[in-house]
Amino acid sequence: MQGVKDSSAPITVALADRNMLVLSAMSEIFDRDPRFSLVATASTAEDFLGTVMRVPVQIGIIDWNLPALGGQKLIEVLRDQANAPRVVVYGEDTGDLPRQALAAGAAGFAPRNGPVEGLLDTGASVATGQMVFPFLDVRELQNDPIHQLTKREKALLEALSRGLSNRQLAAEFEISANTVKFHLSNLYEKLSVTSRTQAVAFFFAAKIGPSDSGRS
Image (cartoon, rainbow, N blue to C red; front, side, top):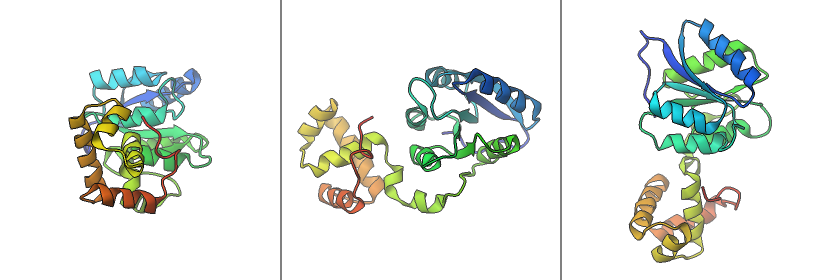
């Protein structure tokens, strides 16, 4: 994703929300703030993705429940794009949503029931390279390797724990043997292990459940 912004220029931003009234209100708010330059708006994850791939922006403010991909999948897709924006999730501050957003790869979270200034300030802070999440110890989560894994990598780790060979992994995930080796190399690096046995030991130590290791 993109790096820290140039402080001498407005922060370029794209907005995405399934609720057109919310999207319109957010557009007006960001238009009025001289810190920002509103580049685009979208009401679906697919439209947002297509837009920011054509016209790069520094930050994206997204609804977690965007149709049809959803916020989590959208962020995971963006993580693989070199010029993708840093993402702030604008959602209901209930349950485990801020933690889920962070685990997916978001750079910030702003609650919908919070003040408008909070959303603007979160966007500005994220543009400078900060991580902004309410009530979370960001450093602790970032230090846990499990939160650095994509859903595909978690699924691969779970498959390793079942004793599947590289050929069986290739068949299960419908990818080539070389692609399996590539994913395993990335997985080992993120877990700071050097072998399949060590990765499996990490899996059982972390007690990753089926809901955590779902395939993307």
